[in-house]
Image 1 (tube, helix red, strand yellow):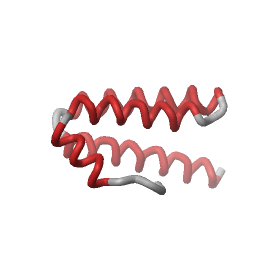
Image 2 (tube, rainbow, N blue to C red):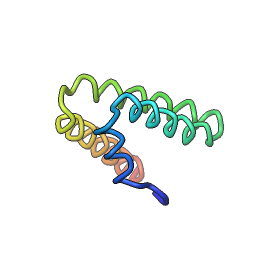
Image 3 (tube, rainbow, N blue to C red):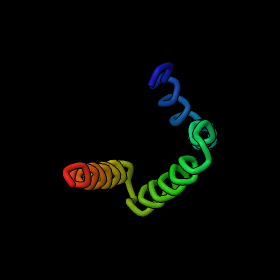
Image 4 (tube, one colour):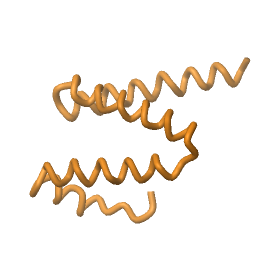
Length: 84
């Protein structure tokens, strides 16, 4: 991810969490909007699911674990489909 400034995002999250989440949403929306409509639609669905997992997880660490697990499951499914 070229140009990603971790320190900037970390400082923003500490200093102004509401601004962090607004900026995060804008960045995600710009990324999704850069894709053709069919892909953008699927990316929005995926992001909505990820957001739900984050909220339901309770803590940031649990959210990371749950989202990582979800990604591993999806990768395994893709791997199996590739063998077919």
